[in-house]
Length: 556
Ligand SMILES: Cc1cc2nc3c(=O)[nH]c(=O)nc-3n(C[C@H](O)[C@H](O)[C@H](O)COP(=O)(O)OP(=O)(O)OC[C@H]3O[C@@H](n4cnc5c(N)ncnc54)[C@H](O)[C@@H]3O)c2cc1C
View (tube, rainbow, N blue to C red):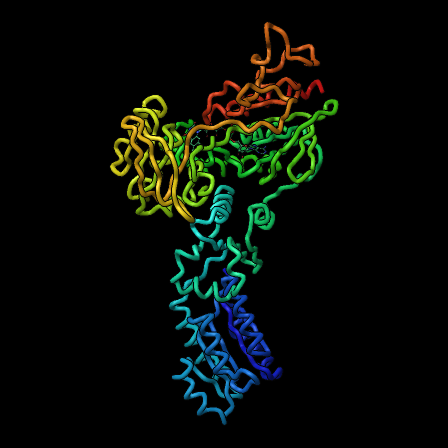
C-alpha cells in the first residue's frame, strides 16, 4: 500500500530543508514526505497526486510566501484534498494572522518558527493531527482506474477487454457519479483533459486518453509480440480448444505460442456459469475457467500473444507462416486453428448505431451490475441466452427473453429451461423478433414484431443482449484451407471424396482426424466442420490433436 503523503511548502530553502528533515526522521516510516519551494508548484503537485489517487495526510505551509501566502495556498489546496490536515508555519509576528486564519481557512493548527526542539513543539501536535486524520482515512484504490460513461461504446469496449483479460480496474462513470465529491475533484484535477474519455489512469501516474485496448494492453504488460520467430506449434485462437492444445502441447515439450485476438477464454469466457463441464458439480464461470487455463498454459511455458490477430497464413516447404495484424510473422512446423465462432449480427434498424450503448452481442458480463433495477431484453433461445438471462436476473428488475419460436424446448437444455421457469423476474416472450431499436445516445426502446398477432409493440428497454447463433470468421485462411460453404474448416474424413485424398495432398497417408487439407495445419473446436459446440468437446479436440501433431512432427 502506498504511504500517505506529508507535504511541506516554503520558499525559504533553509527552512524547507529543516522541516523536511524533521518530518522525515519522525514520520518517514509511515508517510512519504514531500517538499515544495513554491505554493504554485505545490498546487500542481497536488493535482497530479489526486489523479494518481494518492492520499495526502498533511499540508504544512509557511505563511510568508510571495504571490500566494500560506493561508491562501491552504485554502486552494483544500479544494483538491479536502480531508488533509492543514497547518501553517508562522513567525511570531504573524501570530494574529494565523489565529484569524483558523476560522477563515479552517486551519487545523499553526506552528511557530523555530520549532526546536521538534519533540516538544512539532511532533506531539502533528501526532494528534495525523491520528485524527487516520481515523477517517480510507486507503484509495491502488490499481488501474477507467473513467468513461456507461453509454459510450468505447468505454464499454475497454471495460470488456480489461474484464475478459482479468486485469483488475476501478470503473468511474463520470456521468453516473457526477455528484460524487471524489469524482468531481478528480475531474477538476484532470482539467480540460477530462473530456478525452475513456481515460485510463495507472498507479504510476501515467494517463491514457481516448484509450483503446491495444494501448492499455501494452501498458499492463500483455504481450502482443512473439519472443522468437519460430515455434514447434502455433495456435490461433485462445478459447477452450486452443487453451487445451496449448497445455497439452507445451506439457509434452513442444515450443508453443498461442495467438488470441481478444482475450483467452473465447466464447466460454463470456459464459456466466458453465454447469456441464466435468469436475465442477456446482458449475464455474467461463472467466474462471479461462483464468485457470491461462495459468496452466503459462506454467508449461506457453507464450500467449493477446490481443493479437492472425490475418493470413502461407506455407513455405515444411514451414507454416502466420501473418499477424501488426505485420509481424510467426513461423512454425505445426499450426492449430481454434478460432471458434463469432456472434451473428442482428439485422434491424438502429442496431449498429447503438452497439455498445445499450445493444450488446454476447454476455456483456461487464454490464450486468449496471442493469440493477432495470428492464432488459435477451434475444435468442439457446443455452447462452438462458445463462445470460439467469445471470442478469440477479441484478435487473425484469429480464425478458425474446424468441422467434413458440418455446425454448428445441434450443435450450432442459436444466436451463427449468431454471428460467422458476425465476420469477424472467419472462419468456415467444413469437417475437426485434424489428427496430430506438434511442438518441443509447438504447431506450425496442420495436418487437409479434408473429402470432402480426402486431408491432414498442417497449422501453435499457439494454438488449443478442445471442442469435454464431458463424466462423475464417476468411483470413483464403483458399489455402478447405472450408464448407459456411466457412467451417474441413478436417480428416470430411476431406476425403469417394476415397480420394484432397486435391494437392502431398503425403502417402490420409489426413489425420483433425488435420486440414494442408499437412501440419490442424483445426479444432467450434471452427471445425461438424464439431459439437461445447466446452468439453473443444477441450477434447484440442488435447487429442496434439497426439497427431507429434506424429506429424516425427516425419517433418
Ligand atoms: C455465452 C455462452 C455460454 C456458453 N455456455 C456453455 C456451457 O455452459 N457449456 C458448454 O459446453 N458450452 C457452452 N458454450 C459453448 C462453448 O463456449 C463453445 O463451444 C466453446 O467456447 C468453443 O471453444 P473454441 O475454443 O472452439 O472456440 P471459442 O471459444 O469461440 O474461441 C475462439 C477464440 O479464437 C479467437 N480468434 C478468432 N479469430 C482469431 C484470429 N484470426 N486471430 C486470433 N484469435 C482469433 C477468438 O477471439 C476466441 O477467443 C457457451 C457459449 C457462449 C457464447
